[in-house]
Structure formats: C-alpha cells, structure tokens
Image (cartoon, rainbow, N blue to C red; front, side, top):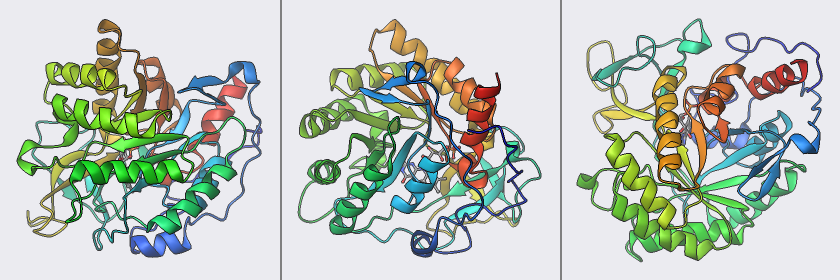
Length: 367
Ligand SMILES: Cc1cc2nc3c(=O)[nH]c(=O)nc-3n(C[C@H](O)[C@H](O)[C@H](O)COP(=O)(O)O)c2cc1C
C-alpha cells in the first residue's frame, strides 16, 4: 500500500454490512463502501508465500461469511485481502434466517469459556478491540446458476498473488443423504472454477445430538476423504470450532491428515447464550444460543492456533493452519502468524474496519 495516511474508520464510518437490513438487501446493495481504495504496492515476488500450491502476495485474508458475493470479494481484493473466502454455499438455494442476524454483545472483555452467557447491547463499544457480535444467518445460499457465474467472476477479479477460496456446506434434503449433498455442494464449487475449497465442518452433525461435524474424528475422516477425493486435485480446507480438549483436537487433526485434508481453519464463532436485558433469548426462543465473533474471541483463537501448531508438529501432519478469530487491529494478524498460523483472516474486524489489511500492508512497508 502507498504510505498515504489512511483515515480512521471504526465508529467514523458505518460497517460495510448493514446489520439493520436483511441479508438479501445487503447482498443486493452492498458492500456499503464509497471511500478511497488505497494504492496497493505489492511486495517483491520473492517475499510471497506458498499457500496450498499458490503463490500469494501476503498471508492476509477474510474467512467465510462477510463476503456475500463477487462484489464483496472485489472490494476485499482491492483492499489488500489476498485470500478472500467466498461465503459458504449450498447445493441449492436456501433462504437463511430472518432478522436479526447480527447484534452487538457485551462479553465483558475477552470471552471466558466458563461464562454461560453474554448480554446483547444496542451500540458498538468505543474500542474496536472490544467489538463483539453474535451472528446467526443460517447459511443462506443462492441457486447454482447464479453461483456458477458469480464465483467465476470472483476468480476473474483476483490479481496475480491473490486467490479466492470457496466455502461449502451440506444440507438435509429428501433427495439425497447429507454426505451426498455436501459432495454436491463441493462439486458445484469445483464446476464454478474454485481454486481451493473449504468445507464448513463447524455445522451440526447428521444427528444433532452428536454435536458438530468437526468434533467427531470418524466423521472428519469419512466425509473429509469423500470430499477430498471428489474435488481432487483441488486442495481441501476444513473449518472448525473449539474442541472439548486437546486429545479430541489431536484425534481430529490426525483424521484430517489421513483423509488428505490439506488445511484447517479455526476458529468459527464461539457458541454462547445471548440474552437481552431481561435475561430472555436475544435472538428469540428458536435461537437460544448463537456464535460470538469479533475482538473478544481473540485469546480463544490464539490458544487454538498455539495448540494446532503443536499437534501438527508433534504428529508431523503437514497441515496448513489458518488462524481466524478476533483480529481487529493490524498487529493481530502477526500475533496469529507468530503463534504458528500460516495465514490469518479477519471477518468482523474487516467489516467494521475494511482498511485493516491496508494498514497491515502499510506497516510492513514502513518496517
Ligand atoms: C457475518 C458473518 C457471517 C459468517 N458466516 C459464516 C459462514 O457462512 N461459514 C463459516 O464457516 N463461517 C462463517 N462465519 C464465521 C467467520 O468465518 C469466523 O470464523 C468468525 O466470525 C470468527 O472470526 P472474527 O472474530 O474475525 O469475526 C461468519 C462470520 C460473520 C461475522
């Protein structure tokens, strides 16, 4: 990026996604950004990194969610996020949840996993470090025809040194099994020209009582193997959340490597009860718990990456690690990279301060 001083964004400008509007409206009108795109000065190619076989200009990206379609991907690429993830897609169109989809929460600083609940709040905190929200979208998806064209467009927008990743998930349907549908979504991404595919394993298992897919080493092996075979030679990433303990994490990582999964991305949002001032469920009785994202999950996410790095080394798994969770300041990217992540991504942080990557790149040039 050029050395021109970037304007403050947080609380001076609205986020690029308007949480008071429906997901469909945001997708149609967004991203809400009309400020200057800073000039990007790409580092010398000798400084680029290898990411799953692609030469990438920086280890900075946006994880699945905030980039709703190719217009959002376009903005992210222009703003210096070299590894943007195209939002999680399904094999067929899906409406997702109605409003509210995102509300501010007060977690009292960095989230403590022993705390049972967090309170909804109406305004964002003064400091972006304390920015926390709950998100609950139900993974809406457009139909395959739209996605084929739009993913192709997203790929075309990437410059040399940038790669778009596509996130996929399975759906329950009458026509086929959950696994078959998951594979269909991955094949849709492949047909659309996806260069790298991420499977969202932090969604409920076939039987909800068995928790999320990623917590079960057998499921990670079975489904991971089917997916990596189906999309071969495209590299497969899985997206995971918090583990019960290190032993479970180790078993899952070993299963992932055995299934030829190439990379692990974590964390997804941290699930908690979100209550209103009267103690009732803030998102309504149908959604008593939901994922917390933003600045206050950073310690959890850093701890995850620290353990992931240790397990990956001890077991010689050769997995690529993607650090996600709570990155709201430029130096947070480095905290993840220093802890052993190969790349680092920001979702909430980039929505509330889209210049985050530009600030990071500027600092690197100045060093
Ligand atoms: C608006 C929004 C939508 C999201 N949707 C998805 C999704 O569809 N699939 C997924 O794997 N993660 C999704 N996530 C989770 C993020 O990828 C990320 O794991 C989480 O927000 C933690 O990162 P952060 O603290 O930088 O926000 C979403 C997050 C946000 C903020």
